[in-house]
Image (cartoon, rainbow, N blue to C red; front, side, top):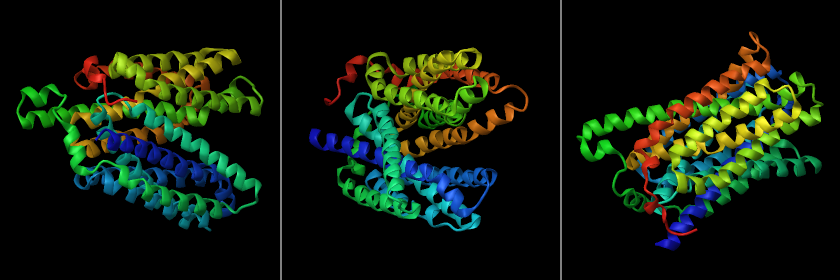
Length: 405
């Protein structure tokens, strides 16, 4: 049993890397696809909304489907579909075909995202200790792999469609090869064990379901705020250094690099801190740290202060989303997929909205002062972290022994 559980954990890491690689392969080829289709930045921005819409719909479909059929069925199927549809944007010749391609690829990516997170919840439950943040860290590793592959393919003169097709084909093989190691539906159900929620223990089943649903939606709202902050950093960190502080373009690019590196490092370390201090403390203090970091970015007049601020912002946010996903899945393990899909779906809306919201605010205030909104969102998340009090934040340390490394 211990060997099969470790195999399921390794397989989950593989699927997170796969998801990050497939999405990253598309992201790094955006400029080439934009040039091939011959569209403006504004048109591309509108088409990218369809990618997000497809992902949102895919999340809502895959969540309940994972609860019904099991992750061993839905996760590899989603991985195969995501790999197969990756090539579609590279083959697009006009805005209409690109729109359809992004909608389909986004749908498949959303299915993979939610189903693998739902499986990660069951793996974490079976281990009896936090492992969710480590999974999310490997998603970032996938993005790095995609960037390296794209750089090599571009240097070799390969067509974007050929590169996307090759990455997608490898992804299909990996998705199929890793399927057997996933936890079957019966094992996932057995890992659910007893519930963690007070309502399920002391209240009627109907009241417990209402309480769980309300808490899941609160988690979803927090995910929206946290991922809005993350989305804003992705698109505006480099521009902040260049436009506000006058940094050269090469130097400004390190702003996002600093943020991303701090976030990846934080996620690699977060599980150990969650096991010691609890998820509530990680969410509360992480959001507070992020608030301090983005305030330093917004108000600091020096370049070194901006780099420190972006590092603190990434480090603080790093552990927040994994705790929200984990809490949603553990709220009712029998409906982990559906609950994770709600939190991930609303969070994804925040990720997409972040850049647009900051852009709109720049019509009213300067870019750095627009970041004050992110400070308020992080502060609100820190206060709202108390929603985890009846979840894994109450898990005694004696239950954190787990199954081993």
